[in-house]
Amino acid sequence: MGNINKTRGFVGYVTSVIVVTLVAYFSYSAVQGPYGLLNLFKIETREAQLVKQLDAITLQRVAAQNRTHRLSDEYLDLDLLDEQARKVLGLIRGGEIIIR
Image 1 (cartoon, helix red, strand yellow):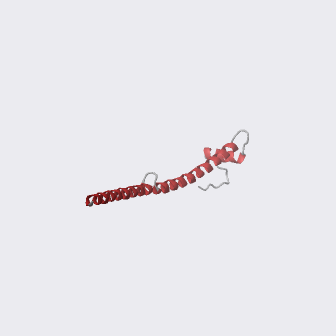
Image 2 (tube, rainbow, N blue to C red):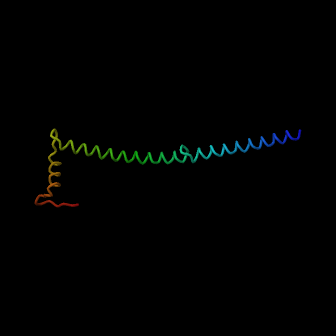
Image 3 (tube, rainbow, N blue to C red):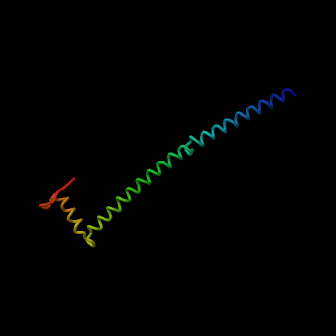
């Protein structure tokens, strides 16, 4: 009888150690693992940065589209054309002051 109780106690101890080890492993994985909370926070932060960068690039693209349209054959903005010609040729009018 005493031998059976020792076996049950040993099996219970081993089972407890295995359960605690598994709980510790899965807890660590939930926080530190490749799909854990810390990586989730890093990914969300990176996503926010990329969204801001995308918004800035989108604004630049829209501005470039607008300038391109204003210089197209269908719509010619003479002020913009004058500005671009002066910039390319490096010319100014007599009474103008250039500030850079």
